Image (cartoon, rainbow, N blue to C red; front, side, top):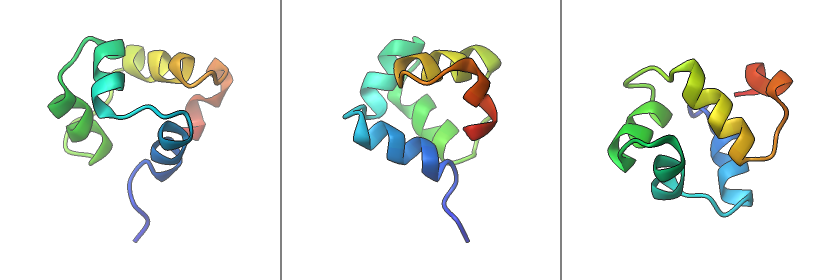
Length: 65
């Protein structure tokens, strides 16, 4: 089974962005980011767009997440 959000995890690693960095950018806890990445809770649309922005990806890449 493919790991959830594997492309996002790879992009984060390539950009040297870990869960605490993403959490600060999103205004949430690192636990919340971990919960999102593991599929336990859903991402908000705001969080997805902010994540794309942080990674330097265009908004049209939303389905890529």
